Length: 359
Image (cartoon, rainbow, N blue to C red; front, side):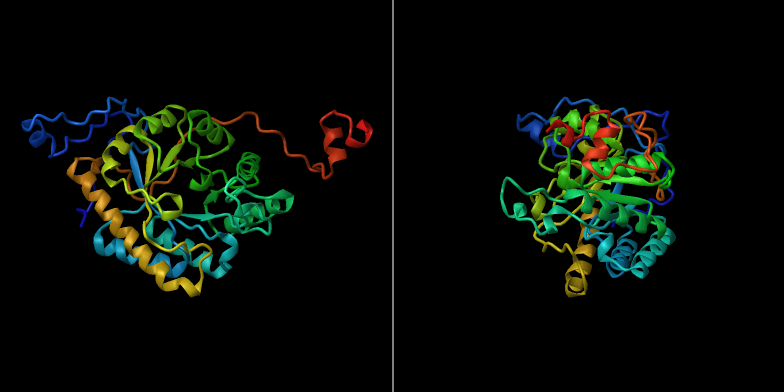
């Protein structure tokens, strides 16, 4: 059990953060003549607006029953949670189910993040069956772009204020709508781990396209992750334990260094050796609820390690969700009331000859 931290103070933005305490294994190793690990990497100078260095996220919370199980387990284990996320998509839940999740998260002071459902990996195309042609969660064609936006509009209308996005174009479109005031200014856009950036330029690109929070690959080295942090201010989402379809990496012992190097960071506790539950439903209810409870237990393990290294005080206060000012491509192109709908009109809008005129 993690000690009760509801009233724990956090580091304020103008206070320096402490570094992790040395591993208790360092002294015995030194007596044996072995060097202590020291990667020499620079600490992140950034933090969340509340001064915290990290927050806790429980992923794969697929519906109200799973959310109830996660909240019950978190209460029993005194595990703090800042965000829960879902992967099956808005389209796989009824209005009543989404509303129930929104209300439960509001009552628990936890951010709810729902995935936009349409994606290439579920589409009728055959590319998903090929090693080189799998587009993962990206939207195929104008139809799936529109479907993703429809999912987003429906979720926002039902009170959701964080959307999990698996396509760069969808991200850009949502950010433009947010900038134009057609989506709430407080809406948070989170990039899926299925398209996570693996180099600094890609990380900066996602931030400028509108990402507030970016999942990065779980197999990157600490040095590579430090490179990403230096490229932008968006929160980094990192799986301390990755699901099998993302590699199955178990990196709990990297937690203290990840907090030091990647702040502001969401520590995500996935689950290795668990079934793929997307898209979820009643036929998988037992697995979804049991795996949700185990993710909370994994979070307890990770937080206990952070506590042993003296880092719990660097956690954001419960209820925190905003990430502060970020870099954006500016100005975002104006949204036209009469957007081009054909290749001919699009070319004319851009001041170029139409495809027909070029023939």
